[in-house]
Length: 238
Image (cartoon, rainbow, N blue to C red; front, side, top):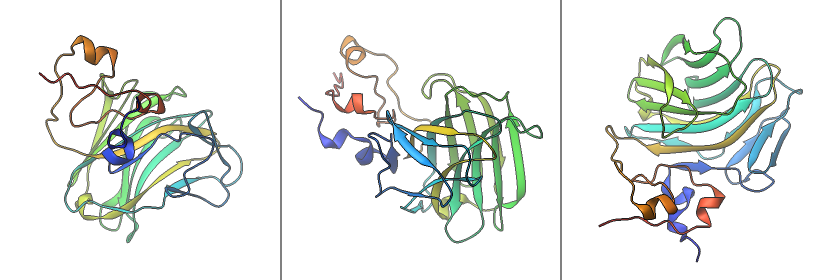
């Protein structure tokens, strides 16, 4: 039996894409002029060359009306300099960026803000640059923004960084921009946006059925892959 459509990522998150198939979903993404974009094995690739600082951006715009969110994504760069995930205001020049970079001035895991409302540009960074696949989690709650980088979104994410905005981001309408910086080819595996509450409820132990099926937190927060969607999700409620 197949999992019902209520279990898929689109029905669970504010936004979700694991880039399944061999092309971008045209209902979700636009491609920047000058970008060379392909999809293979559920990985979106933004090739080196062409115009720097180009990639893909969401067609849908999101307005939070005070709701804290988390933006989670997995990606890697295949050369020097940077891979970017940016949230951009649709009405001002304000943005928040989460970046993996080898740029000498601020190398490693980077978070920055800029804009007429958020304040002059502030850049914070930690760790060392890597070209390995990493998972990133950006939490936005009013004027507070934090980001973590690691190997497992629901394991131990280290290398935390944070900054403060002059104006709450949660009242802005925004879109997501995934792009390559100067020089490198970059790849994205998945991205999703979810509502955020602290602390988040979670299962503290797993029974045998849960281990056989899929590790689940409630509400669903683990990225849904095509393999998961082909399997019944069994919750061992007692």
